[in-house]
Image 1 (cartoon, rainbow, N blue to C red):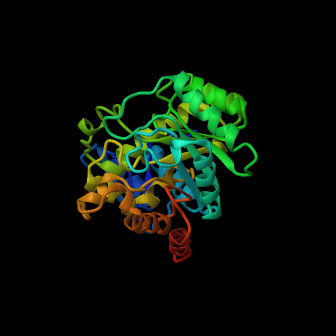
Image 2: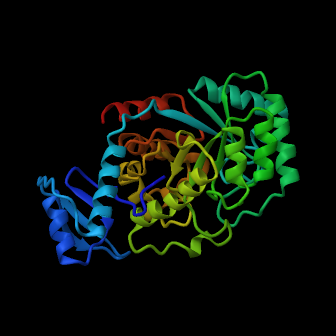
Image 3: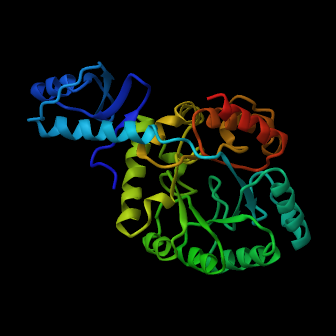
Amino acid sequence: MLPETTALKLSNYQWRAASINDTVGREELAAHGFLWQQLLGDGSAIYSSNGASDDNEFTCVEASAVHRSISFAGQACSRPLGKLKLMAIVNLTEDSFSDGGTYQINDEALRNHCQQLIAEGADILDFGAESTRPNACEVDDETQIKLLSNAMRVLSDLKVTLSIDTRSSVVARHCLQRGANIINDVSAFGDKEMPATIAEFGAQVVLMHSRGTAKTMRQHCDYDYLIGEICDELSLRVNAGIDAGIDAANIIIDPGIGFAKTAQQNFDIIGNLRAFRSLGFPVLAGPSRKSFIASVLPHLEPQQRDGATMGAASVCAYNEAEYLRLHSGGSNWDAVRIAQACN
């Protein structure tokens, strides 16, 4: 389980954690190496590392809790990075914002596209039968299952990890019974039956941060401290999953680039991505072809954004993402791998 209060390692010398209002508590924490600096808009605080190391026990409960949470975050961030993995996007609906009506036209085109993705370096194919772009309409479970079952049939002989992008526990169960390995849940357990379903099959799960629905997410972009609030909200979903019996080793977190965030907030997430490692889980980032790119390159249509996507993906890799969810790989994926190696 994650600590009751979430701490973030922002740099080697700066941390974000719950604020302490008690003077004695601040003094005790400073004696243990962390000096209170300033209050943040969400009620948390910035602390700086001051090198002190007091072995005395805390008398202030709040200071002790903050110290534990900072220690947890430090240990989490020191975990060695895993091999960078490419999760390739396979949209099965023709209303996909960037590639609808292309490889979805028939089974042969779908198979050829997936074989190409594997040749370009995909470790995982992430199948989605419901668009989650802003203002997208919901797709019922029966339709999702029909599309996903057909795709899994067409690609049954391909040796690749299969991920299912769905918010529905009914769809998840159907696909896990037929060999899917990962559930990519953009609602992070919006379906209350999802945690138990994941736990039952011992599957991996991606928990993505968002607010609202596809139709309302743009109304929920108000944050007092973006990175901290995303982590706080994700930690609640993580703990719900662990409470339901999900193995912590099977959890991947995703800060939700493009979901209930403005363009600038998306850039802030990418630039501060390594802070999310403070929760202790591998981080997935999904910047591919998303509309925040248009704030810098407004002349590009979604399908023309692969170069810009790889720029964003390379920064994510440098900032310690372990999974990247992208529309394509190939030579662009080589650039991402070099970016990780430069860290």
